[in-house]
Length: 498
Image (cartoon, rainbow, N blue to C red):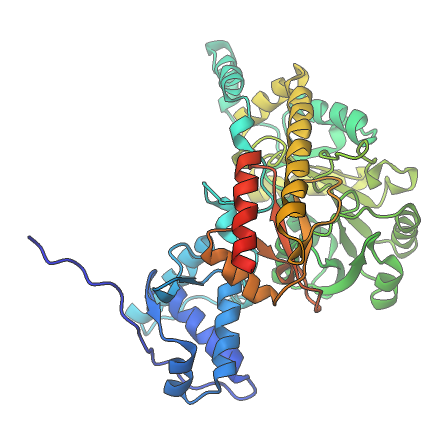
């Protein structure tokens, strides 16, 4: 019999010398993270304790603890009872790792040649991917946020619509199509927006894309020159913040409260910003709605400064307390300055990769040409199937059904929290969405995150959404999990945090 493989041993890596001006905590964190990404610390590798690490590298133990806590909170390290600290089996930035590791390996094997360097690549490498890339992985555990229940999607009906599109008489759908999107889908989206979001717009003013992220990228490229300022909500969606950073513009972090982005503060910080990224219908991640007064102030600022507003219609459809509020783009003063972005990834399923922009008329041609240059067009077959799905009434029925399911699960989540989390986590009223930002009442955010990870509970710390310090909190999702899973996981959370 072949000898059994021994488990990974505790390792001390040569980490090099810290650069001048870099704190020891930052140096240790970056050195260990780089070793993980480069494969020098493979998955499952056991790391020394903070005491042993501090003694080995002649550091204060508090420095080692702080570096480990940051790596815990970002999903690079995990702890399990009896096995110590180890490198996670699935890293939070698996998608980015492939390119990162490949560049490192090439640089080591072909030392005379260095990889090409551009400002964009430098900015991308400089970004710490704090928003967990595990959001693309299947089989997530409670209470991972920002996900709907794909198990409830009518797959058989979707398959039937696909088969109809693939009849011999319709095979032209397999050819290239209009870069702006299939006319049938644009008409379907226009009809949906008129009813559900209060937006009256001709179908020709809708641009079909792969994602809201692609739409924001187009706005940054076409509307914000390199030295421009761009408003970004703080706390806010990390994917948008990172995209703004790699674009090379100057990001201006504008604080958010229970009534949405603080427009007056944005005007004070950057009155001539070229673009403002906002989530007015349901702020990501705090969940508040942009107040009517601030909506008017935001539109007035855009009109006076000649700027544009990127309205990410985040989680607008799933409201449980009252009817969905109209989009910012529905207001008469918004037609020339607001670019409305929506996606079907949460309404249907993530891999559909279909989204849209509603554009002012004077931007339509330039945006369509740019989209055609960058990606030709979105998947034509998926567009045709989605158009039928909407026109035949299936989309509306699915959204209404899921709204009831998610409302029931939100209630079950709140009930379980009330029973098990007293003095640990404060859960506000859940008015809408697929997740909720909760106040942490015990311990530090990093410690709570590490404890929950060890208990097989997935959450996201609020700090991952913040630039400036924010009160300790956790972002928890409830939508994909049934009542039994919610109750069991709520008990596990209480045991871990107590």
